[in-house]
Length: 317
Image (cartoon, rainbow, N blue to C red; front, top):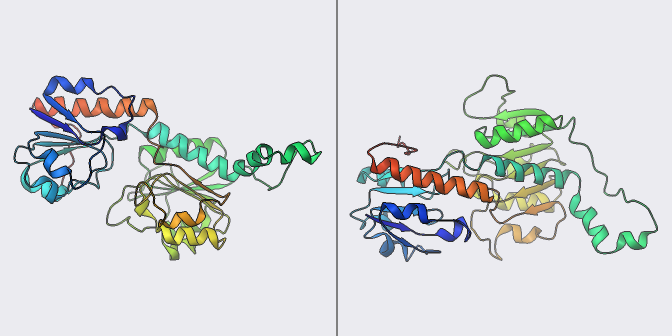
């Protein structure tokens, strides 16, 4: 049994990969380019992958490939239709990252609403030292209590964020495919119009791609905080950058990008120095505990598959 790990570095250098060794001959690569991928998976029975796009061109000559293990909940990097036509199973790792993604989401919201970057800078550049004042209260900030927090996508992460938002005293609005009892579920337009904070937690699909565009931004309050910890392509990055520059929204927090890492031509390169912009390098999912849960699920998925059982197998519609 040949097991190939294409990009273990995305899981962190501190993670113990040895539990998977008992299932076969393991070949691991810290990173893999799209050009390198076809050759590296050619003789694999099982592939473990995070970021490499498993397209038809990558997979078509992998005649022994039986299982692709995605080290994430989302699997938009895998051509599910082609794999299904070949009988190649895909197993993802659901629910492992909810606590830490919710933690980062709320941290971003708190930092942006309370202007922590500006206040920190005021002390660290010695302005406070020379101010002769005991405190500084500019820029003015407001309490989360009484604000409306809109959540787009209400799976495990969205629900975890919702619990914290309600604990802060926020009014909660939810937009999801199917309404859920006990929550104020509204259409997207209503959520965008009424929310002071908007956090995005939906998967990337054909329906959600470019979900937040220029027209949707126009519906928002001009002081709204928008946080994206889902996928970069869920919102129009150019439109979001322009909204910041033109003061159409209050600020953004973002941990995901349509191109990762971002380059100098990325739309957000224009807003890197803005105090109301908080960008992080796709780290929200990656607490040590979360990464450990993720890989443990991958190992469990492989064990189940080899035992003839289906565990976390992605269903093709």
